[in-house]
Length: 197
Image (cartoon, rainbow, N blue to C red; front, side, top):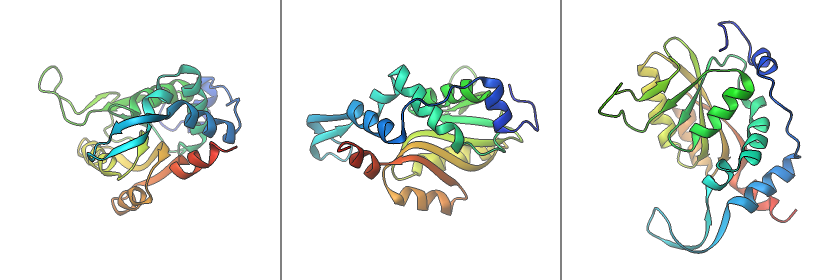
C-alpha cells in the first residue's frame, strides 16, 4: 500500500516493477497480432464484419499484459493514490499496474450488485483520494464518464484516465468535457500501422 504523500515514482521503485523489454513498435505489433481476428463477426451495432479486435486476447496473455503494463506505468500521474479498474477489461490491467507500482486498486462495476456489500466500487477505499481510471479500450468514453461520476459520489477526485487503446477521438473530447484527461498507450490507427512494421 502507498502511504499518503508517496509519489508514483517512489511507489514504482518499492513495487519492483520491471522495465518493458519490447520496443514501442514491437509492443504495438504484438497487440495487433494477438488481438486482430479475421472471419465473420456480428458487431455490437448489429453490423457484420470480416475483422474483429478481441481485446481479451492481449489481457489474458500474462507476458504481453506485463509488457503493456510496464509501458503504461509512466502514464500514471505522480499524484495518483488509487487505481480504479473498470469492469471487465480494466480489472486485469489495474491489478498488474497495482503490483508493478505499489498503488492500491479498486474495481468499479457497471452497476452495484444487489447482494453482499452492494457497492459499485470494490477494493480499496476511494474517499478523499486521487483516483486514476484504468481501462483497456476507450471508444466513446461513456463508461469512463459514468464510472467517474460514481467514484466522485463516493468522495474520490477523478481527473485522469489511462487506457491501452484509444479507438475514437470523440471519447477524448467527452472525457475532457467532464474534467477527465486521457493518456492512451496507443491509438487504433497506431496499432493498425504497426502490423506493417
